[in-house]
Image (tube, rainbow, N blue to C red; front, side, top):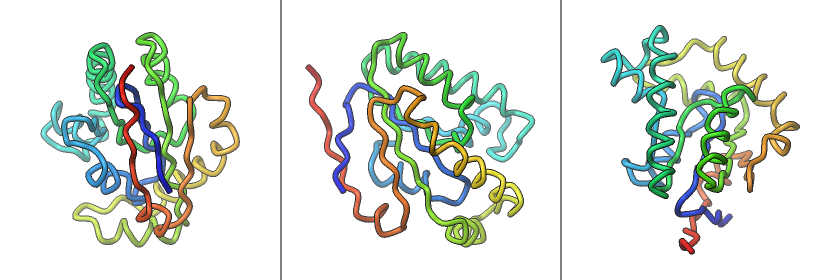
Length: 171
C-alpha cells in the first residue's frame, strides 16, 4: 500500500501500545519529524514511562507541533491517540496553521499488540493494552468525523510491512 503523505502536514499515528507505531515512525520518517509522547515524558521527567508527567509532556508536544507546522515541517505524532479527545488538540493546531492532517491507524489484532508488548524493554500492563484496544475499536467508526484529510487503517502486520510512503510535494 502506498501512502501519500503531505510534506508540510500532520501525521497522527493511532493505535494501542504494542501496535508498532514507534517502529513504523522510525522506518518511514526522520527522527526530527517524530514527536513521541514517551520522548516528551523523558524530556520533562527523565523517565519515558512516568505517567505523572503526561500532562506536561503533551503540553510540550503540542507546542512543538505548532512550531513545526508554522514552519511547514512534516510532523508525526507517535502516541496512542485512541480516544477522540486526544486527537482534538493536534487537529485544531493543524487547522489553525492551515496544514493538512492525515491519520495512520495501526489496528492490528489484540493478540499481536500483547505479543509485541511482551518483547518490550518495559512492557505495559496487559489490562492497559486491552483497554486501549477497546477504545480504538470504538473510535474507528468516528475517525471520519474527526476531520482528517485522509485516513489509512492497517489491520495486519503484513499491511504494515508493505507500506511505502510517497511524499506530496509542497506547492
